[in-house]
Amino acid sequence: MRALITALALTASLASAQTPPVASPYAALAGEWSVDLRVALTDPAYSKAMVLNIGTDRAITGSFYDSEILAGRAGTAQGRQCVAFRTTDGQGMYHSSACLIDGKMVGQTWAEGRNFVLPWTATRK
Image 1: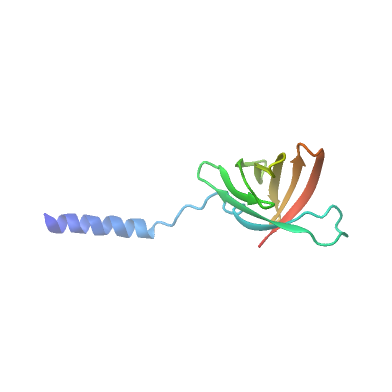
Image 2 (image 1 turned 180 degrees about the vertical axis):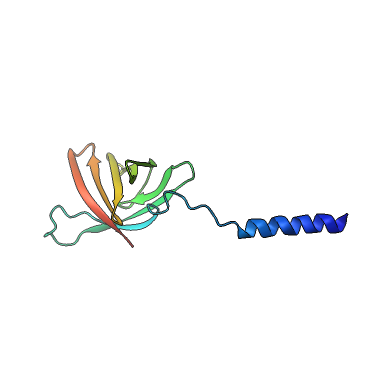
C-alpha cells in the first residue's frame, strides 16, 4: 500500500512539473517603465519611473511619478491591453491610463486639481 501511495505521489508531482505555468494576459503590462513626461519631444529629457504589479484579479499596485498607486485596474478590449490607476501627491488626485502599443505604453494623466491633461509615453526599463 505504501508503495502505491508513493507511486501516486511521484506521478502527481511529475505531472505538475511538466505542466507549464499559464501566462497572465497582463504580463506584458507589468514591470518597470520609464515614462517620458516632456510636453514637446524637443524639450530636454524628463522621465519618471512607473512600476506596475498586476494581480490575478486585475488590480494594480506599484508606483508612478514617485507616488504609490492607490487603486487601479488592467483590462483588455478591442485588441488592446490597458491600465488605469489613481495616485496623489498629497495635494490632489492624478488619474492615469495607458495602453500597450507596439511594445510602448501610450498614456495620459489628468491632474484633477491642477486643470491639465498630460499625454506621455513609456518604454520598458
